Image (cartoon, rainbow, N blue to C red; front, side):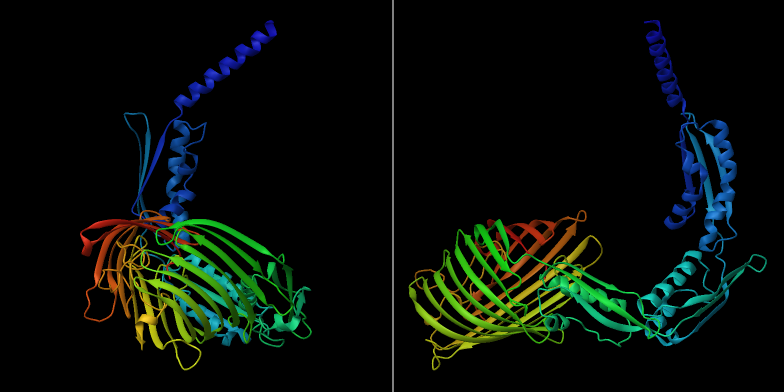
Length: 580
């Protein structure tokens, strides 16, 4: 019992002593003035006072010793950035509150200039365009301030560039910097010796699910071409984008120094033969909706694939399938056979559309071109117009996106235009020609603010407009059109006041968006437009504000819009999708 009591008493004393020491531990505030953020951050890394201000054994004596060391530490912290003549004023005071304040006012002085920059590069790399770009932007020039991280970064980047482009046996034969404090000048001496450039060797494909000849069409280089690591990165990304494979590994094997070649191995792990996606959602244009998608990423060894979808919403349903055949350049070009049935029941029209078609989707330079031929049969009822119309519709469309990302865009532009039509002398029940297009422009002023401008147009020439089904006529209104109005509620009306759709379409949007943080933003907008039969017809307007959340598949938009032209009615709009 006495032994337990002594242990308990000892522990209690230790606890009290620890609390007393903690209560008596001095508090130190370190103030640094006169430096920009980068220099200040480096000074704090070097400064023992900053690093030890939370030390459990910090005492007045230790504080004063650390303070006395500070000028030397500050001077050392400034030297990597080229400042060798700083003026430092330091003070240490204990405030009435008991806290200590260490204050350092620093004038870094002039940066040491580069008096000589001697760069010698020998070997094949000397004429490489990428090296010339590096030399132009590295910043090490006569009269510029010598910055040690910049110097080290240039050497590292030169080594990386040599490895990336196949100059495998290069090395620095000289890398020297002289700092002359008497004349206050820096002299840089760099000499790099490169080997001859290596070439791509044989490419080995480690897989057994697709024809090797088909897969080699994804490779943009050949054996004997100059080695370029970026082409391997591009190949890996292209194979990942096919969705044929669960994993893709592209790597360089041991170089063949005798013939200066680098063999390449591509190791591919296939995906499962079937994939399913199930999703639930809601949009004000469609109401609640559910979607089931079935993918067959590899139908055969030639890379054919199938994707199919069933979507059911409050407005109707859509079921369809696409059979995709890679052609020409399999990265971008495919022949697509389509079959679908779509039912839509809105306040303005009721239609059942059945379609079979084929399209060639391919790139023409920077443009995406789609050549299509669709046969569709559509049962429709629009106000007093109803019937069944069959049409064979050839069409062509072009689209292009400017910008590095189309999902969450900082700055970007998208342009689309398409032409389609039908002729009653060839299978179709009526004649029509239709041109439609759109442009969307996003401009960011800074990290927090951006402007979005959007416009869409369409025009139709038809011999008998009343025979055109719902899918050919133009309607406006909804979350992707003129907000403040219900889905497809805008357009020319018959004598009973029912919307029957228009020959032409004009809509535009101006929207300003402000980000609160990386994921949330607010927007104000003005929409103008209508489906019309004459360019002199009135355009409707809607305006409002909304909230945005940046999701992985694109912004989720929740908007409250006012139908300015219709007596200030308010509508809620919810949508999701890429910016461009």
